[in-house]
Image (cartoon, rainbow, N blue to C red; front, top):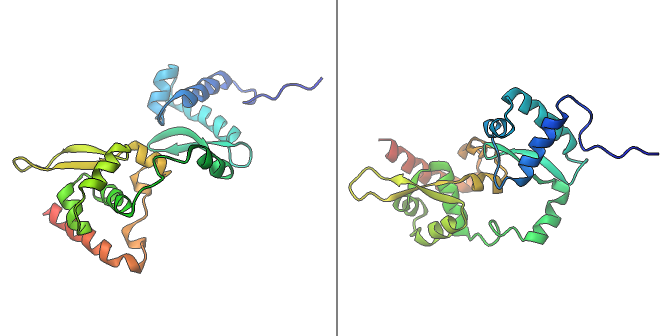
Amino acid sequence: MDRPLRLISANPLDSLARNVEALLVVASQPLTLDELAEATADDVERIETALGLLRERYSEGRSGIVLQKVAGGYAFGASREAAEACARLFERPVERGLSQAALETVAIVAYLGPVSRPEIAQIRGVAADSAVASLVERGLITEAGRENSPGGAVRYRVTALFERVFGLESLAALPRLDDIGEDQAAIRERLLEVAEARAS
């Protein structure tokens, strides 16, 4: 009689890996090592080993879902092979329909955040109210305090959802401005000018 397929191979950390797997399945956002350790009442080193077991089980080519390190934590996501089918099912509502203005605005916030609407408008050369409101509504950016002047403008930063939607482990994974093509020279120049003005 054939033995049933085990999701995780026999290992002293088998039970811990199953618990970590369950936590990642039920979590609504990526979980950090510390959060996983606290939830399982175990130590970070053993959590890392359990994640290694899960990463092997849920790897590209073996499973329709993969274990990802994203937005500063760990989460399950669709494999590259299954991503197109998942996109058709859910129509990726967070990403779908982002206007050019919204894409430019979220890029500015990602690179320069926290940044205010007036700064975004200065960089883009047009008002940013509508694009900012749309991005806040979608959960891609959020308020991050106010400028230091009296009645200072609200500043914005990107959220963990932004990192997750765009598949970034952290903002450090964003392409460097120097790597953007020559056709983006004017945008890069405006970004750098505003960044220098804010630093002074």
